[in-house]
Image (cartoon, rainbow, N blue to C red; front, top):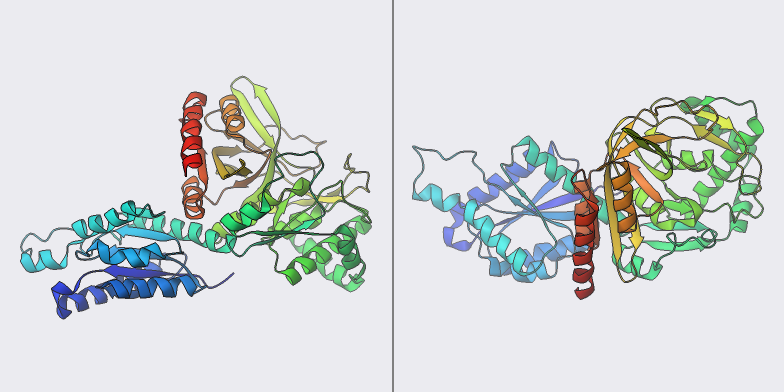
Length: 487
């Protein structure tokens, strides 16, 4: 991860004279420093712009600085919006308009024309807002006082979405083999995705992974086994199987690190030369921040690591997930999320156990895997799908619960949840929107952040909430389909 920062660009005009401009600059610098104490990334004051070329220059500099993840604008005074056009028309970084003012309240005894000339944010931000709307800019608008905890929280959340966008544009995904045969949703236009989201998605042959595995030493495996012992409980005596998973993990990590990849996919249909499907290996890689997609699903692999980056400094709980089966008892309806093996231990409610069991698919040896129950709490599930000509991001609000039964004969990690607006209606909405069977489940990232990310990346966003109905969703999707086709 880079040392990302955000630039604070403040608007004014030269009519006020050097004294007012100096006051604005001093206040803006102080605001940026104070806000940065509560923000996940530094807000760096750059300029109080009073002319066209200053804005154009700072935008050009921001575009070419890899550590700048976005700009935050504010107009302390009135700032004629035509002077922003040249800069904003070239802006390639995420853009947040902070509609605030320096003072909290109107000072009854002090307010005079000098005060009014200096503190014109109320209509300065409206002038600035007009040009953003006129230019059809993708932007985040946050209104409120800059010292307010809610405002800083929303700004910090947007920063994380913007960092997710910056990370996305540099993301490389390693596919070990191809997709599972005949699966539709794991396919997609990789060229369009790279153009739109920045992802470089390429394939490495499984034989090359096997060669890398053969180069792993017993000493390498011993060291990783110590890490396993420190983080997980061993509920098996079959150490040879666990060591084979360690061999797979070390080899996959070396290949990804060498190629600069932060996400990977595989499929049990393409394990030539491998004795086991990577289970524990994939889970522990995800715990370190790598994204994963089963059945060759490179889209969910990329989204998993992007949500992990966006949720950084939260509780780390974002994971590759799949709706496996439903509990349809009236009044007690839940979805059981799991996968054959590969659920990230970041979502575990307690210390995971390493177990060895038959897989029942893939015609390979019994693999080691982490077994645990997921934690309780509110979250989201996210699916990115290729609609042919455009990408659609689907987000559904969920509430995770402690699994209502022990399921002693199910030797996989599992999470149980209630989707909004209810299981059956939620399923109907999900299927109506085309949501995939693979998702990313996150307790850290919010639907608003995913909306911000989709806006920055210029892709369609669909949100299924407690208030969504199938009828309203069908109507929204119809209008969205028309709008995106026109676009």
